[in-house]
Amino acid sequence: MLASLIVTTYNRPDALGAVLAGLLAQDDRGFELLVADDGSRDDTRALVEHVARDAPVRIAHVWQEDRGFRAGAARNRAAAQAKGEYLVFLDGDCVPRRDFVARHRRLAERGWMVAGNRILLSQSFTGEVLDGRLPIHRWDLAQWRAARARAAINRTAPLHHLPLGPLRKIGSRRWQRVRTCNLGIWVDDFRAVNGFDEAFEGWGFEDSDLAVRLLNRGVRRKLGAFATGVLHLWHREHDRAREGQNWQRLQQRIGSGESRASRGLEQYA
Image (cartoon, rainbow, N blue to C red):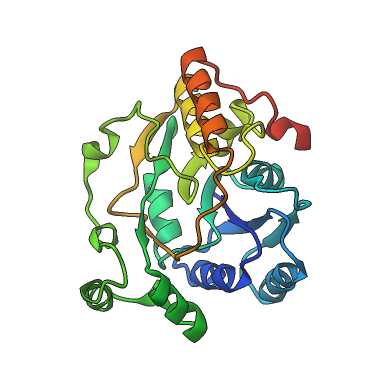
């Protein structure tokens, strides 16, 4: 099974570089990588092209014009070019550890999406990581425990690996905690709901809306906790001017029972 990793980015090539380093160090290389660029400057394109030259996997840079926060549209454009059977969404400031792809592959199951979790890095520690180009994707538990002891990260629990078994399917009909910073979906399911609804512009709830529509379609939520945790670099909060409007749109979706986006993936087919 070829996995298509879709990494969203916007004008943060230092963070994206750390994410790409983590992806190129994966134990499982049965994937392609599509950078879903929401209108970054040319330095991001230059970075992606430089990394792609010697990469052992296919890397594509999928750019769209900068017209404000349109992460859903950027992901749709990239997903339209994906060649894999399985999509894994990752943000361009979330560094994966070396077994990230392998663990998503193990958890992939027809009829289910896999919602992973994250560890938050502090502002100062994020600066250390990026300025020093620290290979945190290779760090062991002892190093992370030391980081937690100095409050450089918020927790260590997601770093531990637990089988969980049937516990992963508890709350399978809940849309909460599904975030596109760490999410696995079968491409057939993504197409069936027409991808992200691009009516969600500005920060907020486009990933929740996707989860709701997948659930309405019959796809269930599987927990990726204690398996796929990523390392989320600190960033300033996005402009949340449209948060309230997007929340209301999400509530309408929940009440409607709809599964297909009104303006989504199919426009790029």
